[in-house]
Image 1 (cartoon, helix red, strand yellow):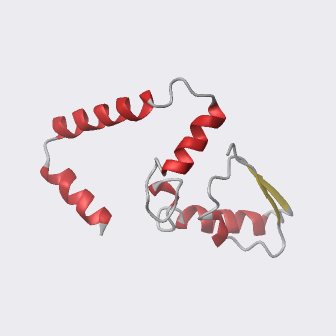
Image 2 (cartoon, helix red, strand yellow):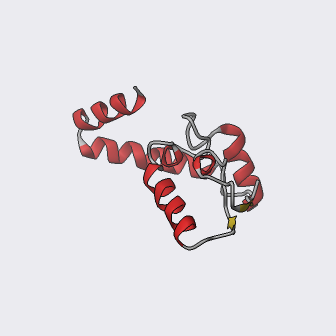
Length: 113
């Protein structure tokens, strides 16, 4: 539902207004992080769900729908090349990676937070 509304708004609002809104939102959100150390920035992003409150804390690009292709491609790559272990840095919230078949794969996920 959110994507439907978001797309409808984008189509009906003039581009220059959207550009101004995005510049304002970017400047406002990034001013909060200017004085923080990298670890503190990511802790704040994680706790505040800064990148969205959808199905993934890592933002809309980490939704199951958005990652279907990468999951299928990665699964094929792991099988085709007989990959036995994988290190995922930065792993994020592991939302879409759960879709991989880990039965014959050693996985280590590392992140800042």
